[in-house]
Amino acid sequence: MSNLEIRPIRRLDAEFSVPGDKSISHRGIMLGGLAAGTTRLRGFLPGEDCLSTLHALQALGCRVDRVAPDEVLIEGRGAKLLAPAEPIDCGNSGTTMRLLSGVVAGFPFTTRLFGDASLTRRPMGRIAEPLRQFGAEILCEGSGDRPPLTIRGTQLRAIDFTSKVASAQVKSCILLAALQASGKTTFREPILSRDHTERLLPAFGASFRTEKQTLILHGPQRLEGTELDVPGDFSSAAFWMVLAAGLPGARLTLRRVGLNPTRTALISALLRMGAGLVEMVEQPSPEPMGTISVQGGSPLKPTTVSGKEIPNLIDEIPILAVAAALAKGTTEIRDAAELRHKESDRLAVVTKNLRLFGVPVEERPDGLLIEGGCSLIGAEVESHGDHRIAMSAAILGLLAKGRTLVKDTACIETSYPGFAKQIGLLQEAGR
Ligand code: S3P
Image 1 (cartoon, rainbow, N blue to C red):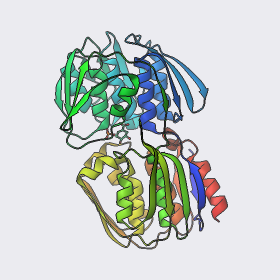
Image 2 (image 1 turned 120 degrees about the vertical axis):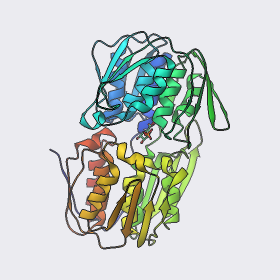
Image 3 (image 1 turned 30 degrees about the vertical axis):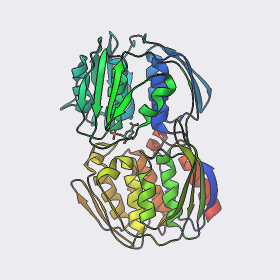
Image 4 (image 1 turned 60 degrees about the vertical axis):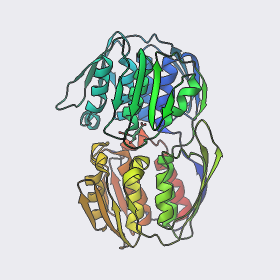
């Protein structure tokens, strides 16, 4: 089992970029596989989750050429994906399983999707229900609505669907199915979730319209291969942003980071907390990309995060909890019960780990109350097999007194290959 041993750092003066965006890499591969012709993805994230998606599209008959670790050519099959010879392993990746379900639902063959122990605990009813309305047969083989999934695809009929959860995975699954369905699909969500699929569709030649926060897509549509530059993943940048914000005298510049406003609510939260942080968009479309600069040392204040902000920082809550641990006073996170359905139950696990570092935390059904400002003591903590939990604990370790050991850190490879190396470089320079 791989562990990460962390010693505190005193200085930080660095400029670097983070690996490609996970959400965009998944979507680029799937849309590229459905399109006619070649799609080139530059800045592709070679993390295990996106490789699961890449292997899935290969299993569905697409030719893939890895011209560099972060550059991929995918030869799309138009509307002619092939039946997979075997069940498809989605690994740890909820995005692979949920979005791919929307891809295969429109093809006249059966696909079985399975994943690791963590993915096998995640709810799939949220995509099974709309896909059944489209006409596909979906069997959730696990208890309740859990994986593995068996999907019997068919010629889909468009649907009118209102999602109860603000989930980009649900929205994207439906849009991918709608591209293949005949007729007008209408989709609504309670709060705008990340909109990467909507931003990418026009690049592949697809069209849809938005009326009063309702998405309307007429299918079936043909996609054309394209070239995409994938920005750095904001969710990966978030770990370093909080580190720099919490370290007196720190200076950090992160280049070519994705700055899609449906992803960057952490910036607003950190600014409310008093962090010295500037974002600069340098390329607006199809995905906003630019530079984040952080100047550490301003004392952090507590804040409240709830409601509309939650979907736009859902993956950043474990690292926001680290910022909250540094802010003197009580930070409140509400309306975040979705965190119980991620790679781990993140409300329970964040509570457990912060307490081990000496931070008083109250766990609520839908959030956390974090009493920040106490002195942080290095600790031995478990990742619980969750990449964002492992990386957040490592950052806390860099800011705490004494030695920290984060156990079982192999999961970091799902989203951030090179994280441990970057920690090593910062530790070397910051002793
Ligand atoms: C993602 C959407 C979010 C996010 C996940 C990636 C995506 O999940 O937490 O890491 O790429 O669509 P939900 O749709 O379940 O909120």
